Amino acid sequence: MSKRAISDLLNGEAEQRPAQKQRLECEEPAKITHRLQYPSLNNSPRPPLFQHPNQLISFSYSSSHHQEFTNVALKYFVDPPPSADLSFRYESWIKRPESRGRLDSLLSACLRDEVKMDLSRAGIVSWRGVVTKILTAPYEERDGWELNVMSVNGTIYLEEHLSEEKLKEKEDMAPRQRLQSYYGYAFESYCTSSTPEPSRHPKGWGGDINTNVQWCSVVKTKLGDNRMIIGGEVDCVRGNKYTGQPDTFVELKTSMAIRGASDEARFEKKLLKFYFQSFLLGVPEILVGFRTPAGIITTIQSFKTIQIPRLVRGKPGAWDPNICLDWGTRFIAFLKSLLNDTDAEGVHERHEKQQRVWRVVFTPKSGVEVFLLDRDDLEEVRNGEERVGFLPKSYWDEVTRDGRSSEPAPLKATTTEAKPVEVPSGWKI
Image (cartoon, rainbow, N blue to C red; front, side):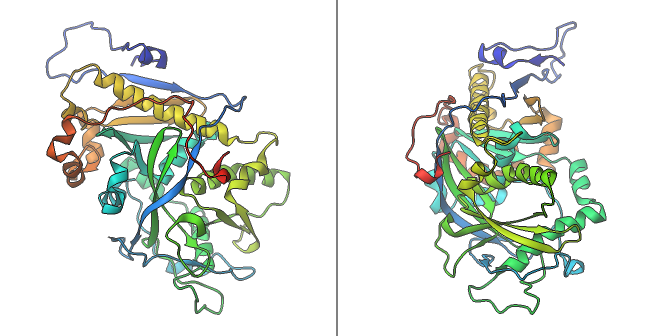
């Protein structure tokens, strides 16, 4: 299959398979692949400004993973006991089955009155985990990923693409890997309570773990010129009063105890994802429980999110948040330019174009490739569900009714030189 370079894209050119024989009318057109190359890690660019996240709405998932717009699943931080055993009550763990990375509950939140106005101006809608993958891609050396992308009314929606094979692989964890996965949830139980003034278990245990239960925050923020609506799970809040904003949010993490220089280097590399996961939702504090290989907590340390880049700055092989943010704006501009370029071809009506789904494939140390899905690919994405592309049909009908889909807001390609926005000083990199 012929590849299309980004320079060709910007020049409006397109490569297709050589026409060696007459194409039948029923044939699918040849796929065109668009490429965005990996960024250089040698120079720190001038970063785009990032607007402090502001919470629009929150919601809970029940023990059966039913979404409700309440704070019933909100947890409050409590000090964990010393030498906590992270394997405690492992046999009682109710683990939610792995599922496709659907946006459905986030989109339900977007249709609420508290969010509708910001949705009409948003350039990006996605989960925090997806945006974290995008921003940390310059330093990802092992794990590739795939996204499905749609543009409706000028808003780009991104969901993680997980094939049935990938879902099965994630579900069928080896026993040791499964136990280590449990350690993180156990630490959360030791550190949280359902009430501001908890009645604690003698061992400091906050309750058996059901990963169906979650509390999520939906925030609006801005990266350069790109308005974004991002949703993500929040572990707990500090203090005895929830303020309705991210200023008291706490992210809970576990990591192996640091025993030498190599352990320290591995931990500093992990801090990249820790940092952006919290940065994107406006979480000001990350509490890390350092554990032994057997799952016993030895040390607990709190990190201020905005100070984390300073901890690694200047060290050999250190990551640079400026490179990540600059890459993020380039990635978004690339998608916008691609969609604008396609729209300019005038091959189909606009309503039909908005039903198109694109696949983004990231390869570590290489970059991303983007191509339009064909009919067979779309069937896999829909997975037998009532959807337009990967969006629930009910959501699609709501956001495209009254003829709005025929004249969506134009997609404006941004440059890496973002216009200044009003940002609290603590959130400037």
